[in-house]
Length: 114
Image (cartoon, rainbow, N blue to C red; front, side, top):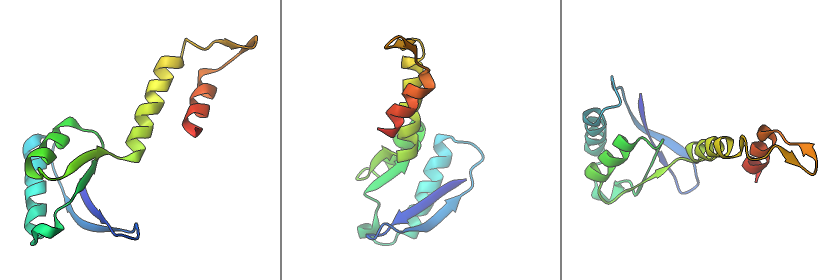
């Protein structure tokens, strides 16, 4: 399911539409975004920013269908990417600190809180 939402100036979200796609393929993303454009009658209402999960195909389609919009990663997925990178980078690097064993999950939790 492809969900399209908007955000008001008071940070409230509202639904613009949904698209049911069989696969996350370029032609499906193109179709959903073209249908969304049909709903937006005025060029003033075109989205300025499109928040995605980082799927490269979707980012490329946004650049094609909505060339004046910017595609950015959502906060959740940025956090997940940082967490995954921390787990990978610090798994073996931090075994002892001040003579005590340090678990990599403790380091990741501390970094994610920061």
